[in-house]
Amino acid sequence: MKYFVVDAFAERVFEGNPAGVCIMDDWISEETMQKIAIENNLSETAFAVKDGEGYRLRWFTPGGEIDLCGHATLATAFVISNYYENNADRIKFQTMSGELVVERKDEFYELDFPSRNPEEFSLTKEMVEALGVKPIETYLGRDLMFILENEEAVQNASPDFSKMKKLPDGLGVLITAKSEEYDFVSRCFFPKLNVNEDPVCGSAHCSFIPFWAERLGKDEMVARQLSKRGGKLYCKLVGDRVTIGGTAVLYSIADLNIR
Image (cartoon, rainbow, N blue to C red; front, side, top):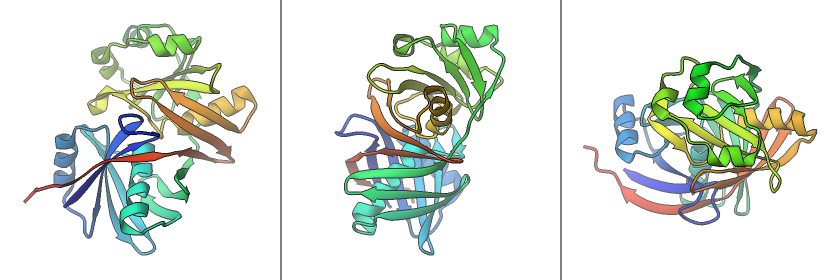
């Protein structure tokens, strides 16, 4: 079966977040999809099957299936638009998180995702030990979200992933702060899914966007993820939805031999 690797939220290869993409005629077993994701060892591998006018889409990390993934959705839309439905400018996906739409505007892709505003949460000693830095605010949605004092604190954070993996709350751990050059910056960690640091996490911005929109008093923002690879995201709050925009670059096309 054909297999693509696309660097999402990237302007050139080796930036952004690489995602594996498999566009299939029919579904293969969950066990096989999970094994492919483990073998690929990327933060996500996306699997899509044509369904009516759109596609069914699922995302697998090396540690299991996940309910929402932004960069792999962008990567899948990139592959479909460039290699399966030439120049398609609107692609609908049915997913565990409902219908998601990606619109292509030349080389720019805009994802329509649910807004997930996290709730205030109590900080524990275990969280501070896992982070290696004391946050100024703590929130919980799908993931634990910590507000740090400034951009330098986000950039210089050196978490203990073994301790992070043992935290009882949250799937992932997100850290974020206001930025001078951008509206806000972040880093994202998912050791519970065998992904220590996710280079650019679209689904985390479903929480970042409503939080920072309220905090900064603006609905349109530009964000930067401060991983080693780095990535830029164009963010907008639209009612109970968010849009997350960016570009993508093809890294490779290969054949998987899984018989």
